[in-house]
Length: 237
Image 1 (cartoon, rainbow, N blue to C red):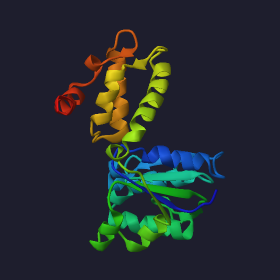
Image 2: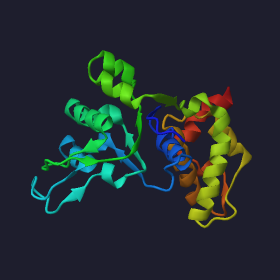
Image 3: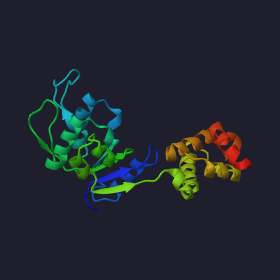
Image 4: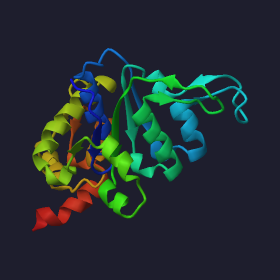
């Protein structure tokens, strides 16, 4: 219920955005927008415009005034994924927004006030990045008032089966397969596979198997070959 800035850490695919969305839904801002952006997937030249907006004519292709994501998230939450990938220049601009609670659109002189709760996420160790002078210390402390670390799926095998059942529940509606179910032998494969892609890989694996199984009964033969081959030595031993 507080507006405290949160930094969510963990490997790719562990569910950092899912957690951020959950925090937003349980906050006092839940009726307002939740806006997510992957900072590492957008070129630096475009990221400033995406976050802060731009004025018409400020660069080639800017045919009209456009609000940025901070404005779109007004009174809500903005989720800045892969925050560790932003450039030093963008770090300075983001720090100013967090300190002053205002943004300036690209090509515009006037400032606009924003009331936004910030949740950031990264797969990197930002404390190490600070020590190596690749990430600003002052920005790190602005973002990391509370840190929540999500362990990789291989370190929490007790979550694999509940997650698999939840994913199957969702997929049965999406794929219109009401009788979708896991064979007990498939469970053994899921529990012993290391899941380098974490929850995202688990979801993709179950969807892959779901579309290949003829009657909704997911068996070993429907799993991706890499899951079966990875587990063969474990079962033989």
